[in-house]
Image (cartoon, rainbow, N blue to C red; front, side, top):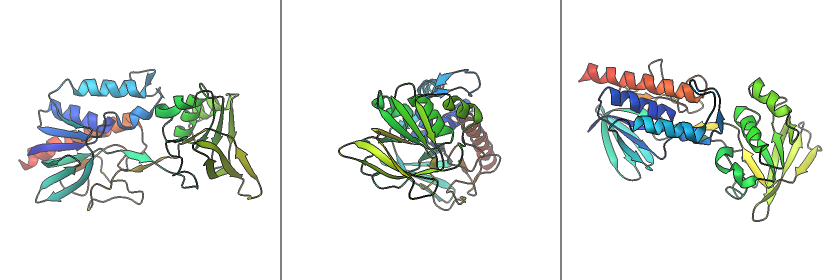
Length: 303
């Protein structure tokens, strides 16, 4: 029986772990990987204390900080369900079952799909949802990046350094990324920005060979782009399906208050899996710290 179990090893989970460890609370972290979506980030320029750091480097620093403490860590393990009964949380994974008095869900989110013909067929055969992870596979090739938000524009900025040509496709009339990022991309000569445009199909043979796009809502304005890589960057879906009975919003995000508490006593949540304002690494870290402090106060109150 643990005092607490943290599910997820991204910024929120690691931050919560550091805080619980400092309070000498007996807890367990269960995670598929250390770093979460931080591993997908190329250049990070807005994490306080670092003018520039890569996502994998920051994830490694998170891990090193956590390992300063004697932490019970189950890495490479996927949680399949969380059940709350009689004040105890039973956490099931693909490798075992664990029990704790409190739980902190920091499972983050997963990549959204565009659901067009060819997407399922060409996953891992030219389609990727992570430029940082798979971008180098398309060195010297023509690629399409789908999505004009921060994720899409950041991916395009990564790809212009290594790809032959980059097409950025955005359904809305304008890019929605931060102005500093959008302005930077506009200056890149090897990138063509195509707005007010939807992807109709991804086609190829054994691998991706191109995409069909429709512009301006007019079916007659169709165009085919010869590309060998498609990077889909249109947002994420919260990984909140492991627990039922907790209050969630229409997007499936777990609803939390200012102390990271949920509608279930003893259950806390932090990071991108919640309805917290904006999804940023530094915000996830702060939310993880809040959750850990709330866990400590909850345990002190109900011991």
